[in-house]
Length: 319
Image (spheres, rainbow, N blue to C red):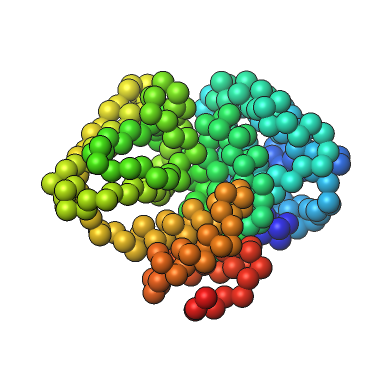
C-alpha cells in the first residue's frame, strides 16, 4: 500500500504548476507534518523526492488527529488565489483515536465552508469504503480507489486534476420512468423518491462516472414506446448560478445499447459491493454465469481479477 502512494506522490510532482504548494502530514499512532511549504519551482524537488521515499508505514491509524493537523496546515497556507484541498490517502482501518465518522465529519464540514474540500483515496482493494464514503460525503468531495499500479499512475497524473477541481456543485439526478417498470437496485450512494431528502454531490472537470440503475418488467413489449426522462440540477461554481438540464430517451432507442460499458460498470460496482459487504461470492457466481457470460474488455478483466483476489476464489471459466 505504501509503495503505491510513494509512486503516486512522486508522479504527481510532474504535473504541478510553478508556485503550487504541497504539504504532507503522516499519521499512525503519532502524527506529524512530514513536509511543509514545498513550493513547486522554488523548493529543491530532489529533496522532496527523497523525503517521499523515506516515508514508512506502521500498523496504527489515528485518522482523527491526522486530519485535524492536515486542516491546520491547509488553513495556514490557504489563499483565495489558489484552490485548497486536503487529499486523504488511507485504508480507513482505524485503531487509534475517535473512529466515529460523524465526529470526524464535524471538522470536515467546518473546513469545507472555508473552501478546503476533502478528497479521498482508498488504498488497497480491502479498504473501509463505507467509512471513507461518510467522510467524503461530509465534504461533498470526490473519492477514488487505489488498488493497482495502474490506479496509482492514473490518479496522481491525469486523474489528479479532476480529483481536485470542481465543475458542478450540489449535483442531483432525477429519473422519471414508466410505472410498468420496477426499480430493483441502484449503484448510487443515495436513492430516494423525495428530492428534498437527497444530498447533492460535487462533480469534477475531465472526469466520468457510471450511474447504474436496474429495472425489471413482466411485459417487455409494452414498454418499447415509453420514455425515460433524466433531469440534472447543479450549481455552476464560477457563476454561482443554478443550472438545469433535461433529456428524454425512448426505451426502444436505448435498449441493448452500450452493453459493454454497462457490464464494465457492473464489475466496478460489484467490487465495491463486496468491499462493503452487500454482496457475497454466491452473488458473484450468478452474475458471472448469467450477466457477464463471454464479455471481455480491459476494464472488466482488471476488475474481475480484483473480485477473485478479494474473495480468495480461483478464477475459472465455468462454475
